[in-house]
Image (cartoon, rainbow, N blue to C red):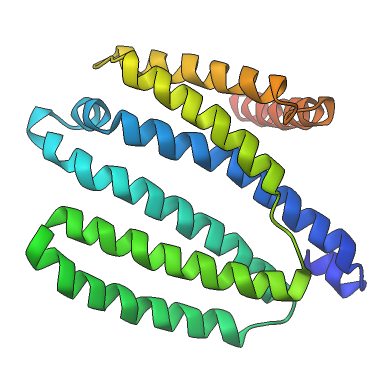
Length: 215
């Protein structure tokens, strides 16, 4: 984006930002939905049964983390457009907001309160940063992708609700849900031949890097 903006190609920079938002939406939505549904067996698998209560804050934290990721890329777009002050101001306000929310919620709700503070702070940052990015670049968020990814994510979330697994079966469930999600995106017209070409290039680069390291 910095390169395109430096050349005065704002439309190309906007197209790049839109594509980044598209990729993030396609990736983060199913991640958040599946982790929300399978939080308890996932926590038990990674740690142990005595950590099962951590599943409740995990459900919220995965949403908060997704919001922070989206905000980070939008903030990067603002910085690429030579807007440095506003991201710093937003970060300072978010720090104060998170402190205040933690102070108010953790004594009352414990771990869940801390997770709620993260979600609320991330939501505030994502909304404000998104509005500022919209002002500078115009409509940059792919709403069509959001709708299609939401439909596909809710579908695999429903599958995960009725198909309950635990232990070492959980990674297998994730792989099958990923396959179902990919198939739904193809049926909905979200994934195209150009996306598969990009994936082939990415995987070829990864495989090449692995091969070189082994050699």
